[in-house]
Image (cartoon, rainbow, N blue to C red; front, side, top):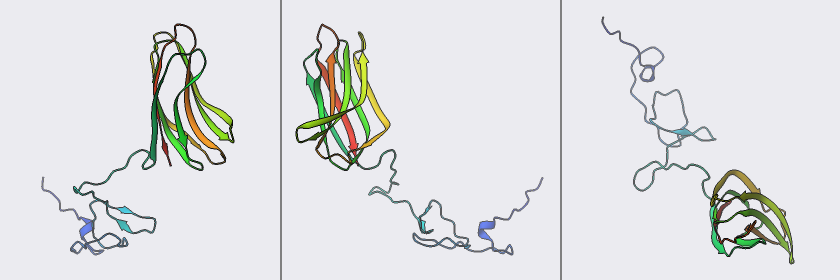
Length: 184
């Protein structure tokens, strides 16, 4: 069986006559020219955009939450039957926060909470964001809130995000924790 010649339309004009490829550069408008770009994008103005390369010649790829400033802290506290602050992060007014993550541990039964605090003139208004109870044998918590987002817009005082814990019964056990969040 013989191979049939098949037209490769990208290299022919409308009448089937072969044409040379037309070079395209970043910023050129797409057209009916037969130029073929191996890998490009079209921006909001309809112009071709080539991928950006880093100093090593690799294509820059950004995944997840690009940018933002990571704010984080670590803390320890002795065991207590009343709530103690383990980690406090100070937040800026009128910013958006997302990607909250924490890693916490205690060898005994404990209650953990995260509260947002708007401290206006020494009168803090607290909003509980998260709560977890840990029982015997459950020594650690590792959580990342990928879809949670909140804003400090509307706040007027010092803004804090606080991780608190308390032992729910004796014997008392120390608390150890890390908490981080991205600020946008």
